[in-house]
Length: 322
Image (tube, rainbow, N blue to C red; front, top):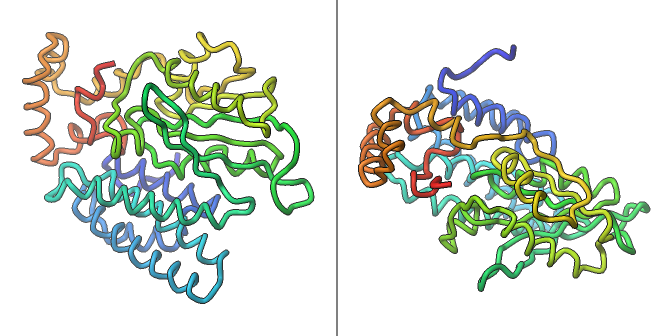
């Protein structure tokens, strides 16, 4: 067993994620440890304040690097700032200024977008047609075996399906970087309830995820860089439920990964709810459930504000009607 630093499950989950992200340069271990040392257990105000401040400082380093024409150093600093703003954003609901959830998410996405332009090969920002609108996403081009520029010809491609509320940078960590290194393309997208889909488009989670994945597959198959016979769908966290459901209806996927497999999304939420809230759910009383949840979050009680997942406390019962 790894020795815990926080008693709060959500903080401990975020702590381990931040340290693990150093593997792909999305965080720096020293920066994270020094910041965590200033954050008391379950103090979301401190978490948001300290990681937003760290994001500010590291983004400042990136600006200095850009001004000095050091693109590699600028890219690595922007990626780290992106991660720090993302974790600050995800802990903002339930604090004294919950609107930081949106503002800090936008700062995370801005740093990510600027960093991707400095990748080799560059990451392509894409728009995928979806039910009268578009899903924002990114196409990671397979790296040439010679180490310079994108690979040529159709390549195997992995569609990276994020979980309930992880930042898009997670998809570089959980498959994107490894795919590019091995001569694969990778695609990620913000579906309903995720990233830009939630913050900018106000699209919300839905159970029929095959209706999200199929338009993504349609779009992928139009790309000349993609081998249509070798498309993989990889889902992490809550996408461990969405991906198996999607491939039950989508025959063009050659292989699928559910990491981890999720049988019932609601189980991890219900386990942390007091009995009165469980009863309201069973009765289908959405109005009283939301009012009760809001009162609990305002009192910043971690067991209720962070049901089952470190970054899930900002989502209401309406978002999880699936």
